[in-house]
Image 1 (spheres, helix red, strand yellow):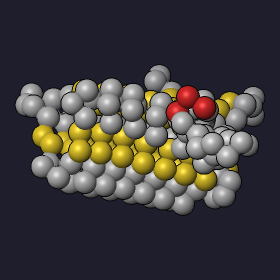
Image 2 (cartoon, one colour):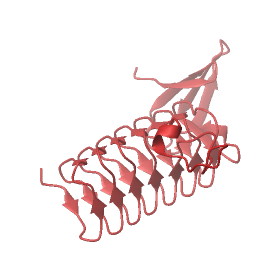
Image 3 (tube, one colour):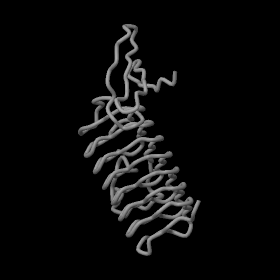
Length: 204
């Protein structure tokens, strides 16, 4: 594996940690104590806040904004101009008119689990979790946790279907009548089980 590659026009703090074969493109900023795994791509103009933790094979597309203390697990995709926020009650100044500083409020990070994807210009409100292999549609505003494999869209975002690990919408196979519904991926043939509003990968 090779060393990380940083474009001359990028701003990477010397206290950040970059994994092997990770690429930071022009005008991107990676702040102090951020940790990026191996084989990641941080696109033009993207921002990674202080202490943000990012796994392996993660893609941050152009102008994505990942505010601290977000955690992105392996193989996450963050589309162009996505915003992962960190303040539920944002104010520039306190009630006495004093400019607020980092110690004057508590940052709440967004957590994005393995393999999940967030479409262009989506916003994820502070403190929420995007489940494993979930897909957030472009332009959505996420105001609640997103289950594993869920396809969510709209403002506020609501589940409109399920997706498999390949990212494509799943096809219903049958309904066993015992509260369990079976789904299949049209690309891979993988099978999934839906029970009580949650989907799991059927490894059998």
